[in-house]
Image (cartoon, rainbow over all chains, first blue to last red):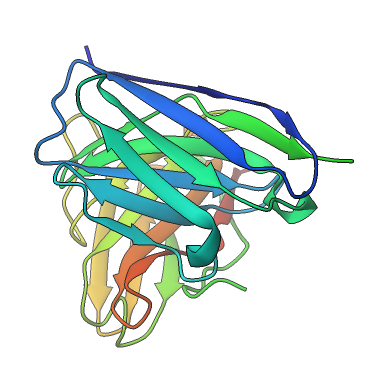
Length: 115
Length: 110
């Protein structure tokens, strides 16, 4: 059974760095794109970026300068770091693995940025 | 403001057929696949349609997708109360080198 379990700090102060990790169970990294997607409270989905099994990443241009997505195949994990957060970064963050007809999502993690 | 444009809301009665539109441009829908997701309240999105009109295993054939030019549509036939959810379209955008979502459509089953 495929599972994506994510964790990370839920409350940050402005200017801090958001750090989330997604552990992958039941599927190999090969063949999938590993995504981070967020959803501000009461709003729609926003793609943050993705990384493939080779480590090649693409980022949302609006977040590009602040985002790093990395892969640790030895631990079956991939991670998101978003620097210099503001209140506008408050959202539920999802990790997701996708390949054609296959789409696995984590449970989501609420990250709140507040002073 | 989202790159892909969806109506904010849609509604129908049980048994009816409802369509949700998604409008884009030549940089996204016009040259790439369209995907549709269903998000039930308090849950992660679920893939409903991939590559414009393909259904993943387990998705009922009441759900269908289509694409024409720079627009796409999701149709739900035989509407059921459990279809009440938010629906999102998505596509790759070549000029942004990234994925873009529509703003979402809240479907209400009356």
